[in-house]
Length: 424
Image (cartoon, one colour):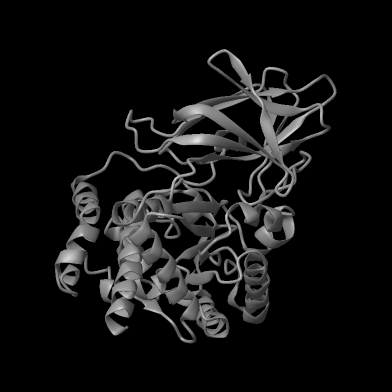
């Protein structure tokens, strides 16, 4: 699903941006229901709660880990957020990540990838560039190019260029918010003769090969927010990059986001052959499951709830193989239209996806965050579009809309945590 940038913001967009920027702070200080009068009428913040139709033991265990981190300043809490274009767009997961940073202890910001190589939209909160010639066929699109082994990022780029390199800066604004002391290069060479390397202060750094995750780990001489990765690729060889992971080794909440435009559950389960292996890099304590909009983008007669649920069971089992105590929160589909040959057609499967997620949540002791209800139910997307919160395609949100959802999700999470503490 395509996702484009916004034009110059109008007065309403500026107002909403300022409003959502302060939503979390106000939500902590003011009584419930205040925002029903402040936000556009199309937004229903009273519906922004975590629902647990079954056991909530795993979620309470997640809160206990978060409390331990906050009390002792030791250890890490890992969150994995997976989805399609709503996640790849980065506004939504980044907003949650940044909110949690302000409320807990900042850890690491997860995986990076030079998405420009794939000719798709990318996260603008960090700067990443590449040199050399690369091929990066997209997981969800047909391509004549030879496909890489996809993993947890859902992307892969292959090069045979002797001058290939990738560099990134975590703080393009010049701040010192993010730093790291090690870098994990995710990927593989066509043989042991093709590998990444880093030159720092005139020295070529040696990597430690992590055989469990088949990745290359570099220890840097000092904390930094910037690195320049080069590749040793002899003639006739190639290297495939599947991700970069800056590591600080400090305690805190680590937020990993995996999003690919157009991704459905079979995209992650059947086309990402290294997903299970790469899950060891995350070992999530909480998984935010936001896959479903693309699974449902079919005529109502063609959407099969049982098949949808079975695919989710496979994904949950995959996560639990690495993290048996992981908590799960399902994010329901937003009210939306879907692409058809001659334009857009209303997606009639949103309620069916919502029911399926509630049934799965009861089965697996998971939570549900109901975006469909927050929007106002059927055909509410037109009102969100008119309010500047959804795009004209009535499928994606504007950056302000994504940021609002990120604020609402974080407050729902924190409100549920406060409620459980009060009950205990």
